[in-house]
Length: 145
Image (cartoon, rainbow, N blue to C red; front, side, top):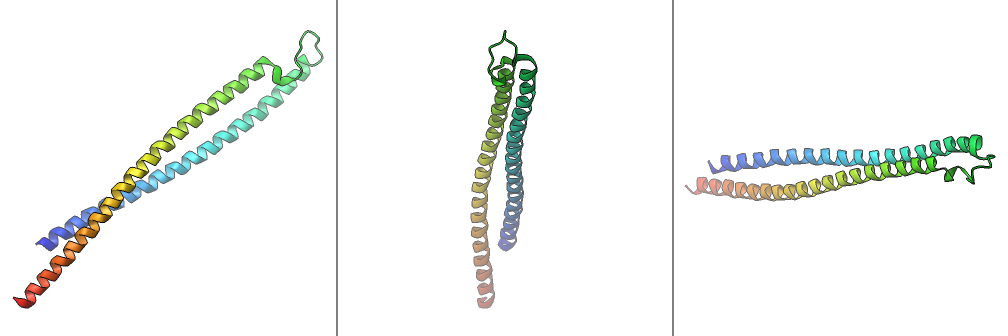
């Protein structure tokens, strides 16, 4: 009977270990997704900068360049341009902060689950050792009995 109980305990820990491995895979996939989103965000920022530069160069050339009542040297001095760039920077920083926080949460989850996985592996080894010992005792009892 002890052998059956130990086998059942081992199987339950193996099932939990498999669940943990699945969770680790999911967390790793989420970290990969987070990295991809960070890259996409950087690409968006660069594309937005390029679009704003082009747009405000055209506005500057058409409206401000030869107009004597304005003292702007180039498009980057236009208040509207500076506001747009500030918005892009603020949006980018906020999103990067969100993604960084998400990655930190994922790292903490991975660390916690890895600790549990190590404990479960230790328990499984311990119970396998007990199972082996019980089988040997039962076998020797059968030979001597």
